[in-house]
View (spheres, rainbow, N blue to C red):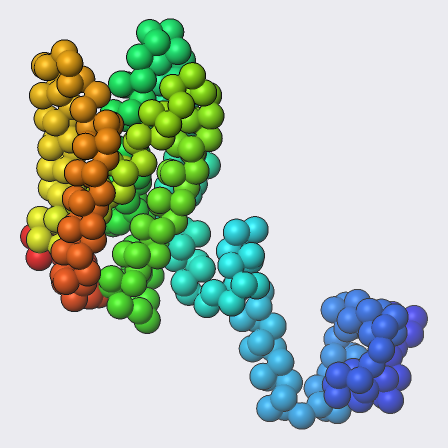
Length: 278
């Protein structure tokens, strides 16, 4: 080295009072000059220096926030909550692309056959599937983190569910725009989607995260097959009486889910995430 940082500058650097651009050149110099680092160590408070290195290590080791996570934090969401939320499996690009592909193919088939029944039958199942895939050791990259998160298990369930519903309903809603010829009928999937999701969650508290959504899906398929067997009632689940029934089911299931909220506490939660009964 042909030059070294002066003692006064090193003392100012140690106190955090050195201004740019001298601060930048000092940083660069210290990275390559053992002599100046030794002088800095003598001029600095050892406790403060160790604390500074610890903060630097923690900052370097901290995972970088993504765009969504950073936005949530800026709006006041806690670090651990935003991380658990953005790590929801269905918020990954692969899920979005898969769901979008299914919806696009369904819309193409609907427009070809001039019959909205396929889209109306499929759309309510997507939020239910998304919720089911948001829990479990195999699919959740933050499974262990969720198990020790400082929050009630029911709150974690609701956070993930809101994320799933927001993503799934948004995709379904955008796809509905491709079916303008059916008017309000193209939106008739919304209440069944809420009813199926609420029912699946309510049953999850007792049957587990595998059996509950599978049973709910089977019931929905059974209803559709029964309606298809009656030519005049093929779209019965999407008529006004069917919508009223779906709204009532959603409300009853939501109340049942709230009454069973304690079953989703952290320790029991580990059991139902493996698909076992509570």
